[in-house]
Length: 415
Image (cartoon, rainbow, N blue to C red):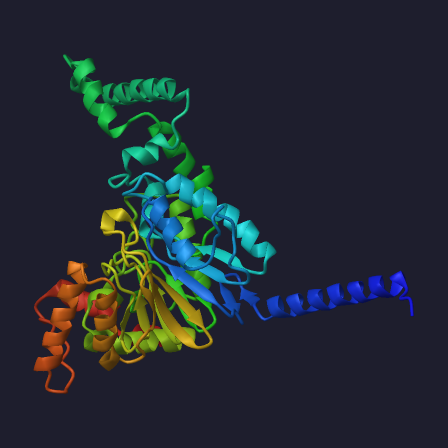
């Protein structure tokens, strides 16, 4: 019996419609429930500090299966969370940011997302702390007009000096002075400062980015959460950092520069787990989450769990400046998985599992001296342990700074 061509067409259309429904159903699992809150995301990939190293950035993106050989998005419905510190220390900052912005659109078309968080180095570039900007980062902004802009900037600088203190320019060897000045103000410096200002293209991107992001049961941010700011709602962290950067005043330091603020705080990475455990418990309860993932504090090659897996340190030192240690964290229904060029490992859920985990990481990369040292310290601690947790360090009541610090970090601030 001869088939009707219309029947075949109808079947094809029905199949296409079904495929579309299935695809839509898959994407419908992930839902945005707030400006900085997503639920139902099946796969989350977290990548730490990149510091201007495009080649290493592409290595970790390819390892995670997020881009193809043409650098296009292949992550499907994955949510990528980059926890800040794209700029400084490497020459490719602009190239990385521009590529990630392209991926944001491509990922959204596939049902995924690319979340770019604010790190302390993004903030520093906005408010003008340029200590770690490299010549290559200025060169990325260099144009045929850069020499003229540099001349105008130098003239303005000298005029400002003269206006403030006429004696400062009397007898000044302008040629020698300019030579030294250009070391800190190379070609491209003016354009860089314009682009990273609060009104510039890259500054505006920072002011559109979140500080703290919740995906499923996990909080992501750059530095860490401390009890000092525990009364804030999640959206307030972003609101307050944005407000400070938009109208920055060095004489009025706030949350964006505070060592206990979300861009800078290292206590979850460095302080005693016994000492900070109660604070962490209070923070997790306050925000109703199971874990916090941070960058900022380099681990030199390992995705490292603390506090029985409730804090994950994910700045592995991807950039060559920090050793080129490619790794990333993946969160899926099956739990947390650390990925390395040599393979993947389930992340320990208890501190007592960390020794075996680290031994397997070291076996993948035995030449990493930092990991060897970490392993030796962990083995030494395990062999000398009496089975009881070490006591929290005592605070000298005569040390006003230490007393104030502990008051700021008290779990009571979260209640």
